[in-house]
Image 1 (cartoon, rainbow, N blue to C red):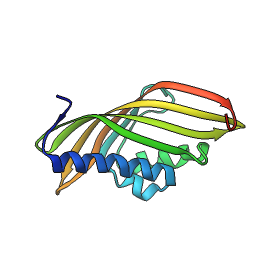
Image 2 (cartoon, rainbow, N blue to C red):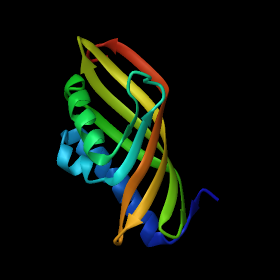
Image 3 (spheres, helix red, strand yellow):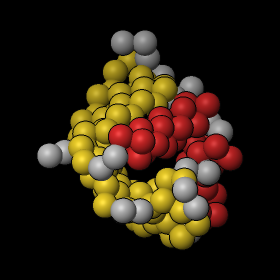
Image 4 (spheres, rainbow, N blue to C red):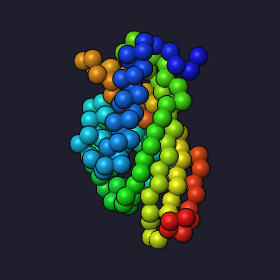
Length: 142
C-alpha cells in the first residue's frame, strides 16, 4: 500500500510538502528552510554541478542563490506515496514548475524520493533526492 501510517501523520507530512511548495512560489527562504531538519541532505543527481548539499544552513544558502534564476516561479507538489514507521517516513512526491527564463517559458516536472523525520512532534525533510521527469521549453507565454 502506498499510504500507510496514521491519518494525522500523513496529513502533517502532506502539509510539510505543501508548505515547501508554497514557500518556493513565494520565494520565502525562511519558510522554505523551516521544512528541513538541521542535518538534512538535498541531492540533485541530474545536476552534477550541485550534487548533494548537507545541513539546513548550506541547503538554504544554495537555494537562495539558485532561486535568482527562477523569477516568477509557480511550483506545485503532491505526494504519490507516504509510508510511516514511527518517527520516520518515506515519501515519493511529484513536482510541476512553470517559470520564464530569457524569453522562454519553462515547464519542468520531476520526482522526489524523500525521507521525513518527526522531531519534537513536528515533521521535517531529512533527505530529498530530485530527478527530472519531463522538461518543456517554449516561447514565452506558450
